[in-house]
Image (tube, rainbow over all chains, first blue to last red; front, side):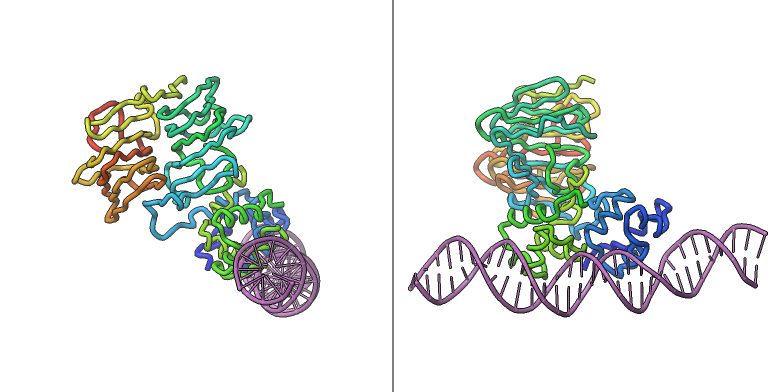
Amino acid sequence: MSGFDVGARLKQLRVQRDLSQRELAKRAGVTNSTISLIEQNSVSPSVSSLKKILDALPVTISEFFAGEQLSREQVFYRASELTEIGDGILSWRLVGARRPNRRMSILHERYPPGADTGEDMLEHDGEEGGVIISGTIELTVGGDVQLLTAGDAYYFDSRLPHRFRNVSDSECVIVSANNPPSFSDGGNAQHHA
Amino acid sequence: MSGFDVGARLKQLRVQRDLSQRELAKRAGVTNSTISLIEQNSVSPSVSSLKKILDALPVTISEFFAGEQLSREQVFYRASELTEIGDGILSWRLVGARRPNRRMSILHERYPPGADTGEDMLEHDGEEGGVIISGTIELTVGGDVQLLTAGDAYYFDSRLPHRFRNVSDSECVIVSANNPPSFSDGGNAQHHA
DNA sequence: TGATGGTGTCAAGGATCTTCAACAAGAACG
DNA sequence: CGTTCTTGTTGAAGATCCTTGACACCATCA
């Protein structure tokens, strides 16, 4: 049912790190039996157990399940099929979220008035760029701040601290891309890109 | 212990899709109680249960848990600063054309009625994706043809033969990205991406 | 008003996961 | 050879998850 060999994957990671079942169990706060049974697929672990074990490796659950692929890759995405990764305020719609090894994230973003990626500037690897479709956005990159409006664009190295903020009183829409994909999955968006 | 609010995340996805607990349960092959308890974090679901539920959304486990964790180049581009690489009919406006080693090309594209990337399908290395801003475009990728309209999107491996064609009687606007950048400088555009 | 259909919640018990404790196999050593 | 340490496995008991079958709440509608 799983379509994904949890046991084999766990064993792979454990052996890779040269750990015994007991050693891993000890670090994870579970028993060696648990590891054994999971590796044999005799049980389907609870998320909490799996989390404990992966934390000890350490590997994120998301990483653990990466490679759990789709049969045929999707090319066309109806508007309703974009993966919503908004947090209730900002709305980010990701193209091809489930694509396993894609090189880019493409986003249809909506910033309502007041929306803000946060006072703590974003910094991460890769590059990102985008085009303002409508509205106005205040973009801070490095030390620079600019107000961009429809038709304007940006492109920068994501290692520069950056922040998006809609200081106007109307919605701002942006289409952006980043590489490598920082939204490798539809997770609850913590930030823009 | 999870450091990740499984219940809230599930509820978010379910509500986003406008499904009741019972409806989702039915599709997933579990009971509504299961959904209820998980959403309240009263239990930590087994991976197999969670998988069944996510399959019904559909969302990959990796997606579900994503977000669990965690030089002086030009940055801002005024609309007028985008590099026009159109051929008189099609209009492609490239962000950061001069950037020497950028990883992506980002384009603001305009397809007037009848515009066509050509009968000879395009094929090249890399990946490309985009979002339709307005109008309608006929996109052919591999053997598939789709009519995409505002809000729709696409993403594909550029080695698949592809072609963009505006078969409507109004302009179509797209913002797209491709990697690696297939457009270097203002060179005469031979094709779309 | 009562009937109906929708929602989410919850106790009890059956099903499954996890632990405890034992076991067997192999390696290192004298 | 036996002792000791390690490894992974496994049966039975305990803990947790999942289902059954309620229940209360809120709509709509006659």
